[in-house]
Length: 348
Image 1: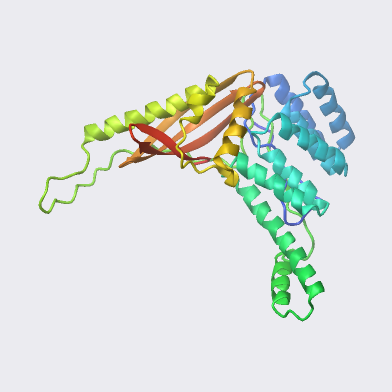
Image 2: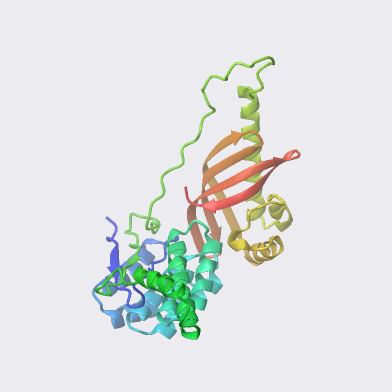
């Protein structure tokens, strides 16, 4: 059985939540035992021993993201905030695909009242994974802190402004809901047992169910033949969408950046309000710079509605020493003779 998940006290902020690395990382039995040993020592608050074992492991595997993340948590728990910030920052540089290190950086920055830096880190987490609910919640808390500062400054500059005080009082109410000042715990994902191949995400996503063609009877036409597509037409369309999705994954795997970018429509909804140009520069840097990339799809389901389609599948991404499994959704539109991606997000 896997080691149970456990909680870590977050001494930094009553509003922000720090989470343990949730990416699915393939590890061997030996590595799993190392993760379990360090986690056990952390649970027992034996931080010097946990740090020593983590450092010993990293001496031979310095780029391992999971153990580095554990090291950052240990540094956080022992009050070594600057060291923890440095550790999480290095992870974001080496593994920009992972949103969790950005989230934990934001918690640390918020604990130092550096809310602008916390906001920037959370926006990066959301840009990496637009479906990352924790980062969205934490970003809302950071905005509330920034609003409190702004309202306080406004009241300081103009004490006669009667409209500011109610707003300030409302904002402060958000942060007085916990009168004891207890902090939300940080959840550390349990390392796998020898029988488990990967580290599970903290919240399992329900499996995607393939949507069959509608069996509802079409409404009778008033004065013209029915225009609903035939079953064969729908099947042909699903095949076209399936081919487009696999072509996108193949272009990504082969680092064919031109073909990869051409899989996206001109009206693609870029994450984090990036411009199309900035998004392409970012994707090019993340793809071309890798020594190898593998993107494998499974459990693909297609739902077609006219010239729009939704593709849902499990995506197994591998690049260098990183392996991540996730649910992926592509919203697509037919432009001319091609099916192009207009929106993508992770999650069910």
